[in-house]
Each structure stands twice: as C-alpha cells, then as structure tokens.
Amino acid sequence: MNTHSLHDLTFDQMKALLVSEGLRPLHAKTLWNALQYHSLTDPLSCIELAPPLRRWLEGSVKSGMWKLDVLPVSSDVRSNDGLTQKSLLKLADNQEIETVIMGYNNRHTACISTQAGCAMGCVFCATGQMGFSRHLRPGEIVAQVHHAKRVLAEQQKRLRNLVFMGMGEPLHNYDAVMTALDIITHTSGINIGPSKVSISTVGVVPGILRLAKEKRPYNLAVSLHATTDEERSAIVPANQRWPLSDLLAACRHYNAQTGRRIFFAWTMIHGVNDTPDHAKRVAELLRGLDAHLNLIPLNRTTGYEGIESAEEAANEFHQLIQDAGYPCTIRQRRGIDVAAGCGQLRAEKKSRRQAP
Image (cartoon, rainbow, N blue to C red):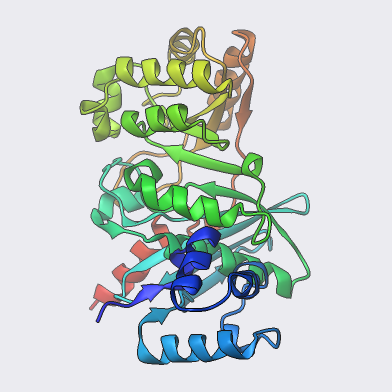
C-alpha cells in the first residue's frame, strides 16, 4: 500500500480528498488550519477537529494510507553570534537535508533545500560535490518551512523570508517546488508573501522560461560566476548544457515577460573571477538586463582548493559594477562557524562517520 503525505496537498487538493472520502468541504479548512497555519506535528491534538474529521484522520494515519511530513533533527548547530542556526533534517528514507535560519536586523530568513544532493556539480559547492540522490516531494519542502517557523516561534520570532538556495537545484525539481510554494504562500496557511520568496538557479534555462511563461511572482536569482563559457564550464558544469548565450537570452525573455528584476549571484573566488577585468566583463554581459548583482564570498569546502577573494578585491569589484550603473551588494557572511554553506554540515557529518 502506498502512503501519501497530507503535507503534499494544496488546499484545493485537500478539500477534494476529504469530499471524496465523504466529508463536508468545510472540514478542509479545519485540517488545513491545523497543519499549515498552526504547524502542528500532531493534528489530532487540535481541539477544533469535528468528530467525522477526527475519525477519518485517525483511521487514515493509523492505517498508513496518509502520513505527515515532520522531519526529525539529526544535528542542530548555532553560530557564535546567535544569528544563524543550521539543522540537518532526516527524511523517511534516511536521506538528510539542510535547513538554515538566518537573522538580519530582526528579520528572519530560512534557506530551504529542494533535493537530496544535487546533479549540477558546481565544483566549489559541497552539495554539488556529493552528487544527486533524489528530488524532494512538496511536503518535504514545506516541512522545512514548518521546522523553521516552529524554531523561531519558540524564540518569539517570526519567519518572514524564504530563499530556495539550500541543497539542490530548485528548477531541476520544478513541479514539486511550485506546488510547495502554492502551499507556503497560501494566505490561510504559512502565508509567506510571494515577494518574500527567492528561487535560486545555476541557470536551468527551461525552468527560467517556464517561470516567465507562468509569470510566477517570486524573485529569481541566477548564479553567474563567470563571463565566458570556458571559465564558467570549469566551475559550473551545467554551463555545458545551457551556455551563457542561451542563459542570458532566457534572462532577457524573463525580464520582458514578467517585468521583474533578476538577482545575479557572483561567488568571489581569489584569482579565478575577482579581477577588475572580470568586473568590467560582467557589466558588459548584463547590458540591457534589469539586474542586481550580489557578490558572495566563497565558503571554503574540502573538495575545492579555491579561497575567498580579499576584501580589497571585493570592494573594487563592487565599485566597478556600481560605476557601470548596476545595483550591487556584497552579501554579509552568515554561519561560517556552523558550516552554513550549502551541503557543508551534511558533508562534515558524513566525514566524521567515515573517520577511523
């Protein structure tokens, strides 16, 4: 017998399910409220459940027909400054994924994973170095948001922003991610506003084109990192499938179709992509695009020999991009002492397990 997760369901799907089981449509709002608004780990603890709904829920969960996605914590670490908390969460098949909570001036952001591992193979990324295991279901994505929400609620804080920049490539798992976002942004549930959601991609062109066609209301962040196909393919293997010309054409199409600015990410790697010439080529590459460039200091990993750019090089790069007329930000570093870079905590834990 196949077990399905109630956390995989949008509100309309949940209502259709309950009606098909002989329950009244109004029960969907009660169950949705318990699962998605209150983030209950046991919906049977909700006193508002009407007897017919309670009986159905007890029978469905006990029989194994339906389950909940409540992910146990394998490891939980906090940064010394108290602004970052990283959790390693265990899935039902014993895969582990990372969810990070970051604080910025009393605004809290959760960084969400969309896959166990990643198929894109970016050489400086700990997740890319570990390879691809599988896609996450919508409920497994949503469960990370509930985890972050519960952690912050214990501290009397509120989750305000989401970035899909954790383990995995979101646009490689497009359908599950969009279903999860339909659930997460529902106004009667978690209710994270679409403008508070950012989706990062290494440059999966078909996904960018789908976002444009469907006019999804989320922020798009594109990892660039290089200005020539030769340089980019060396650090971002996916560039061999979707070269810069195709990627930038898709980005221009996205700008035109949605009217939305694109946030480009540039990981600053000493001696690789951080010279003034690189900055000037970036400005030329972005010509005609509505773009914002985020400069990100490299998070060192054991599988990559590169190191982060010097502060002086980053500042000069930043100034050159601004002088060219593009908004540019040097991203604040968060959680370095807790291996907050994508995939680092899982990689470190695996390394400790394998140590003699």
